[in-house]
Image 1: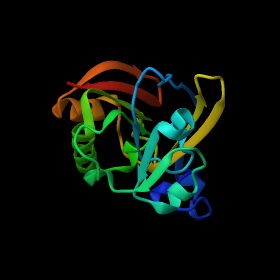
Image 2: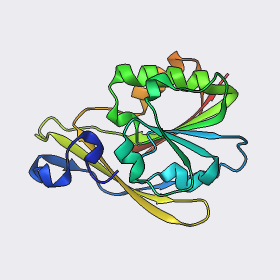
Image 3: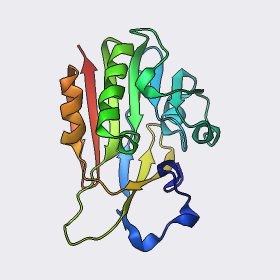
Length: 202
């Protein structure tokens, strides 16, 4: 995703004085070679970071055909609403959400994580990367933009910029929803403006 396109606004339409821009943060992606089977990537359009990580093992879904058409990697890309995944129960060993939840209402997040759990096999793992958005009361902005520098396990580098309407969110926001659906937290990491969660379906 380039800048704030996924939020429905083209960069040329944005008044950048209304945007709270967070500094670049580095994200080191874990190798997924030890995870067998297909990798389901929710919100796979734009840069397609997970598709670049997992290649032909990745099944990337996004409800936006335009976002998927912007992606250039070796994944299988499907136009699909993650609230109603068209896969059988227990299809995937691994699922990922790379800066996708920030574009969903909390009700949608709840629905998506329920569906992700359904299509994961028992013992399957879910990886979530997303933004921590804490806005000081004195800051009067309409939007936020997070910038990430991505380091792949093989040393390749990538970048992503993700923007949306201002809302406060953090690791606890999504961890609680995931735990409500029975996911177990295996690992959690939080930086100033980004977090990572590794979860398992029991």
